Length: 197
Image (cartoon, rainbow, N blue to C red):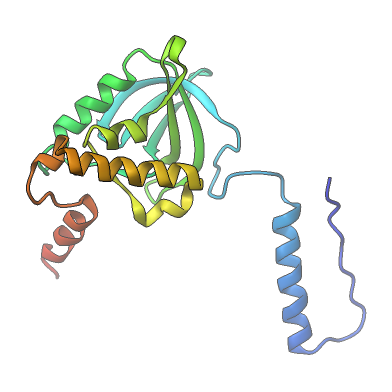
């Protein structure tokens, strides 16, 4: 275990020295902190439970084994917004994949809406665990959310990117549309079109 040293300074310091000590102390604080996922109140260990409601193709409510209700945002994907084509198809696809299955949630961070962003693994019984986010992309029900690809391990990042290329090539799901609009572009357009006061 890493011991956290304490700095005691008894002589006056100039500004550069003070900033250097402050920076070093901040770095040590991060290194000495218990292992945890970055974010506000994000559990560092995986959680398990079942889905009790699916909002859209990339978010749902998890009921954990201890009875807590947790808003989950699937890491690494972005599904169509509710008023976009394929939004309901994507939501139903995710609901079907999660229905009556045990889920393992691997926390990544919290988003601005206080949802737990996590990798979601679905218990498939004898065949093991299936990655719900990857399945959504493979079926053409979501995009790989490249903006946040840095939150993913390198292997997941590569699999998600390849799955999107394959779904595009095959014309799966939303890729049947000749020019599907990515959800992040749709949201940006909606913000630009909002009346200003």
